Length: 175
Length: 175
Image (cartoon, rainbow over all chains, first blue to last red; front, side, top):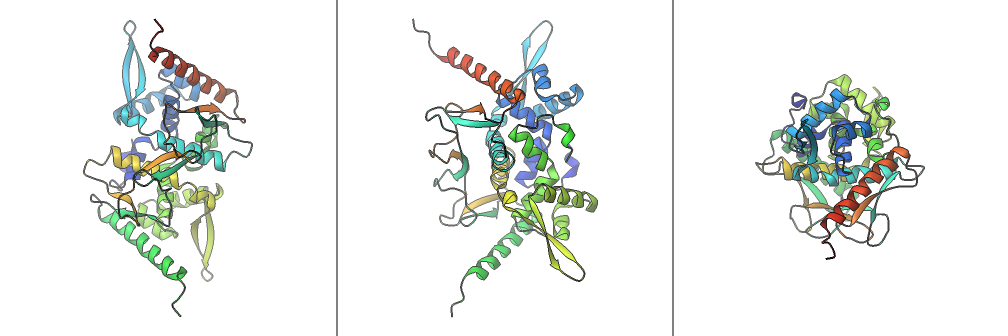
């Protein structure tokens, strides 16, 4: 988990990365969403060294994203199943997939999502669940939350000041 | 960029991770979205070792997410500005932030997004831009795209077979 790398313990992005901030972990979660549960199947799909896979599965289990379940008694065999917290990671993976398809797929997408009702390729975008309005830098802004520490407060203050300057610069003067 | 770790070159998630699959890179992008552009400001915000910061900024620049711009002639000084490709990464960061706030913020969110029109905290969710329907595992399914290789095709086939079995198991028998 390499916790020591972060003094940024309050930032929700830093906290999320503490749990999954590693290529292998994110690819393991990708495969878990595609229905992979067993060690050998993860290994075959990922081409990852067994000791590394053991480590990443353990970290994801400790972080509460996967749950280890016994599927065979003799000999004991376990599979790794997404927990509710793990399933809740899905929008992050879909946002990564959409970005990869937009930015790094000159030859066309290799993996995509379709709507079974319309048969069309899905174009995932973030909206505010409360209003249905697509997230837009002009309207939706970052703010320090109730649990912010000094570091986050300073970071958000800089951002808000810069934003105010940008707005002032883009507003035509009243003359 | 540690390209050699991946034989999974076609998967859009693996490709995205090749560009940003490192904690520091993602936190650098977070700060860039908050308006940070200068080396010293990144360093102060992140508490990262200078040589590591230099490496990550170079990698993000080579991957086309940041652009190096000179802001002072004598002595020459550069800043790092998000490119369109870098700005397009925003939904991934917001999805990470939302997940972190839902899952790892027992004491309340430390950073959040608000809607300036309503003054309310934003709840970011993924919808299909074409239909407006929230992305839902029951309706939206993964599919191999035109550029899929054997590896992706096999992975998606397993997923679809498992999905068909789950559906069959949950459909009441016709007797």
